[in-house]
View 1 (cartoon, each protein chain N blue to C red):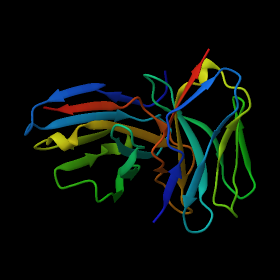
View 2: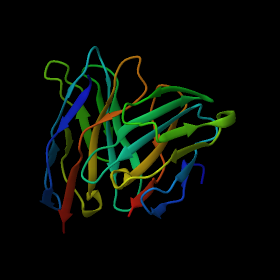
View 3: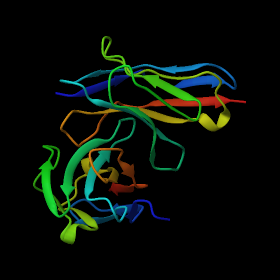
Length: 112
Length: 112
């Protein structure tokens, strides 16, 4: 079946540090890949997505590249801010499917 | 606010009672999804509607759970004879097609 494995947290960083959250997936064919973010007290929001191999999704300074050869979709940000403190979820939607399969989430805390 | 709304936001009930949650999707979205999220985990798919038709139910959805989407607009999720293991955040999402899913704030259920 389809599954997503992401780096366990929690992750604690200082402001302006570099952030990487690893995500790997198992799926048949070419799934669509997503990063969702959940800020404290809020619902899930789509952060970025990529729908085919070598696509790069980007938003709010975050980037992730769809790597078919390594079945990965790692999330990166070059300089984090306190406002980036949240739980980040990697997810996939298999081809011709509609439901999302999520990883367990990674809690990121950025200290001033 | 034209996002996905869910009611109630919080529900505390005693074991054995029935509960019903409501989800109002974004108006032009014909696809509606229910997910369940437990502490420290990512959301897990429960069921999916396209318009008023329920097209898939996860094996997580035992016979105590039932979901409806009359007229293809709002949806309800009912849990009969609640158990402590049903305590979780119940998330609703909607989408216009096989695309980005927009999530509501969730209903947090606590079964005492």
